Length: 567
Ligand code: TEU
Image (cartoon, rainbow, N blue to C red):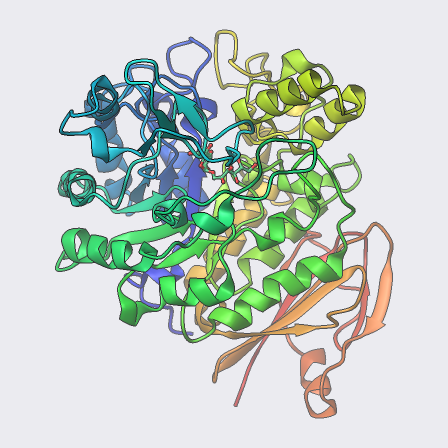
């Protein structure tokens, strides 16, 4: 089999590092760049092609670095610019690339641009942010009003997130040029791409209309006035021309886009339009969420399969998918979509990875998912650190309209802090993450779930990820194959085909703790051929499937991948 072109970005696998929680080199309880440097061989062994670093820039850390006060320096908490240069060099030396987080919908209120902007109504940078005499009734993503009054001038400024994250005014060409200059500076320094934070919120409806308030509230969500707004495509095309065009190597770009539709995502990712390589869509991570993220709904597997399949078909041949079940804003995927009980955690973590990575698109491995890390047993308010979680709780407490013990239970399932517990390197008290007191408690299960026991153990989640990533690198059908969902309505089986002219993969996964038997709906002409096809990957390492296709009998959380050539 001839392998895919290693220079083709479509075959790359991305690993996300949340630096605060990855590895702490100096014992202050917070992860840092030297901690990452100590683990680059681990990343290389896993086989990932690209590392995406959540923000390491200077920041007051109101939102753990998503509030930036200097885009061109590293926060002392994480290290120095020289450490970052060294990380770029060490990754490059191993054939890996580095993608930075670009957070330019907003800055910190401590960024010099905002300090100048707020200083007087006639400051030259006044118009770099959104100032109005009267606020609208928009709700911020972190709850409460999206406008805050500034005493210096008596006007209000817009912040779609916290009051310490004022929104930049992208209508102003000086703002855009300042952002592009900063991006070029990083690329010239050796960075290979950008993950762009809420980049579909940069173009607002400039008339800033009132929105419909939530029942019982003065404020309401206003997404329709800033999601994929009127000039969003124009701004991204301008960014492409000003920053990416004409560079020697491909600059990898992914836009984080809450609320993006398939129709818009096609426009954002159609290569002919020169905007972005891919977007993070949110459809499949909102299926179990009701009125807000702590209002939990039961998740039905057919809905999850359909959400993923819709994007496969919607972008096929026109754009490109990104694939994720978890990141620093989502709870642990094995706890949310799998089964984190001791009997099924390992098999279900592998099965989730198999299904995700064998869809068409670029897979994102969130730190710790390759170890099968699960949600922590959080019980008290004091267990949480995240601004989104804490401000939701404070609002609920102030209003008195929510059952607080029930809310704590929901927070334990959905809080962003679940993704942010320290990476579990070994069974020692600090989990190999820190010699000090971790900023957020380490999951007590680290005595069993950790890299030291998993690396090299053929049955581990880590080794399964390694095989899965290697499969993508060896077999072009993983990157190139089209996608066909089988059994869309089956409540617990997730099965699909991937197909190129030369080869075909059959993926079948049991998303339940019950042994499940069924016959796959394959055309009669095809069915016989599959019976002889070799297994290329299984979640139950060392076990052979109970039945060859098309008759399947899958053990609890078993997933199997078969491959055959097509003539
Ligand atoms: O998140 C975008 C976003 O919309 C968040 O509200 C996210 O959907 C939510 O946290 C899920 O519960 C990005 C970053 O990923 C996030 O960490 C930042 O807090 C946010 O932007 C502001 O920069």
